[in-house]
Image (cartoon, rainbow, N blue to C red):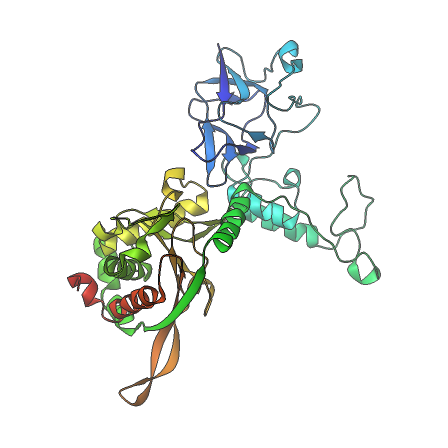
Length: 412
């Protein structure tokens, strides 16, 4: 029996995706639920599992092609033996909805690679065919790419190029007065294109202003130092700082609901729930998974959810539903050393909180100069619906809650 491999149903608002990579080649035996290929959309990378045991006898769409829901990517024969390929007639048949299938003898099947490794190969201009995979199923890992880059950079006899593509390190830069400034042109991923589109949309449609304040992090640092070991022992997760920022944000949003609202045409939509997006860096770029109903979550619940999102973002395993929605966003540039920034609103939301690096600074308390661990907070807001008064007071409410964390427990 022949089983067609089709593109899974894509999310609403995501009309198409890109076939990122095949993890099997024609003639390979495959098992039911084995991931055969990855479909990259503007939000997530979708796995395409086999619907039954058999042999992959035909690949209809090659890596890099644009696909839509339901497109047939290949064929599995449940009765074939490993090493079998599609009949000649089937292989030569025209396909109007996808690129013509290229026989394995004419062109190599895409090499399987982990998402982080694919991004690094694209950034470094490394051909996947030149990298030896050491991961599970011979997949290329980030370490494999690093080794390949180092080997490529090592001194070696100059040889004539064998490919039409110009080599990035074809000659020693010192000996070539001109042409020693290589450039690399890399196609933007769908996620990067989507991020770019939304940021431009935000800048062009919202009246964005940013208000700043500073917060003394000593009370939270002291609290964390006292309880972090016991917290981890009881809850099985480390006690970080982001959970306090989430709780402080919810505290302020309850006091000033317009900061948690959004614009829909000529209406202002006030959300009676608190879904906080946490900006997370991933190998594919910036993603913002959503913590749902944060007002009902404990500090431990928040830390567990953030740890889970961070892990799965690195593995490219976040689902579309986890990246959709949100009423407010927190971006922590401090993890990378940022001291101050003006974050851009994530539409259709109306505000975003930027958190930065905590540093010891000289401050005045009670007429005395003292050293305190200070963090600059920045909240960008859409001035179309949020007045300066509400924005400033909301940020002050966050500051006061962070400087007196007992208020978060007592909800006062």
